[in-house]
Image 1 (tube, rainbow, N blue to C red):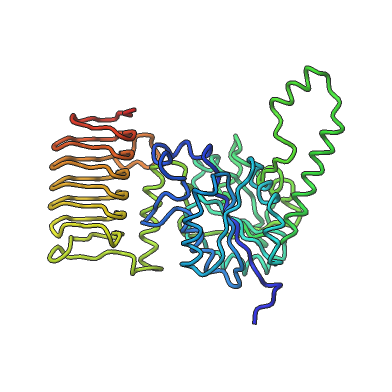
Image 2 (image 1 turned 120 degrees about the vertical axis):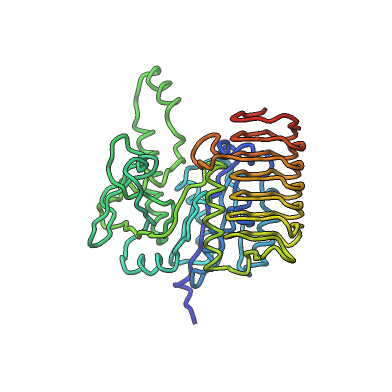
Length: 415
């Protein structure tokens, strides 16, 4: 029987409405963490990964969305996974470490020996059980999930240097101006409860510095406009950087997929990554069909049980179709997310696109992006209730909610 000293608590940081601005127009309708990737809310994927951790006692979601926005989801996922999931709302942003610290009494309620900390906008296979085993062997306060990326893109992330023999974190710098390393921080951590003492030390230092500061009124005014609140503690700059090289922090490298979900374009890519993972982990969620009694399915495709897809349509690869969507005869869907209550009429084509809730795409119409997930107009996005009339072509465009398109558009943002 597992002892109480072996208990693990997971914490997933979900951010808030001010953080999802790059995710518009999709975040106008739903909190970003609840946007569906591969047919499941974004936050569902890290929650499912946490479920695989031995002796998991509780999962906390921390953010500053209104509680009512998460209550229904938290209730249903707790029942589905049979593990307590609770949403904790920050009164204001405290930083990644400060937010964790402000709810330390809740997190320590189950007297966990380890705390798993994840960011909701990370797309990964989340190798948490193996990472936990490595963390226990290292014997440090914390272990970071790390990944190798190209030297050109490394400066978009926290770069780090680790000892190749011991995997100890030797140096950490957040988004450096000059190249440090192609090894980056993935935003997934395992800590012992000592992390709270480390955060407390930083808070005390900040308070002491504030008390000692004796400056002129002009300097005080300047510093006040630049300074962060005294209870705002960042995990990367305030905790990881100072503790690097002190035998407290270690790294665990993932060789599997990893991405950050900052934009709608990346959500489409990550939906495809999760669909391909389903082939290994949840094959029952993937659709199949040969075009006789059901639609022709190519590659990895998720179709919600309530969606109606015509047998003469051809779907895939990398397609996710949500609840109550309707796909007409002869339609062709490739690399796209079709949200709830969408209607795609006969012989319409959707490629490299996200089609928003209650939208409709007319007969013989074409909604298409070029497929560059990083470019601003690399995929086409239709907001909620956008009607594309018959025989209209929409290419590399973003259309905000409640619009009707009766003429073709290319590389436009339609407000």
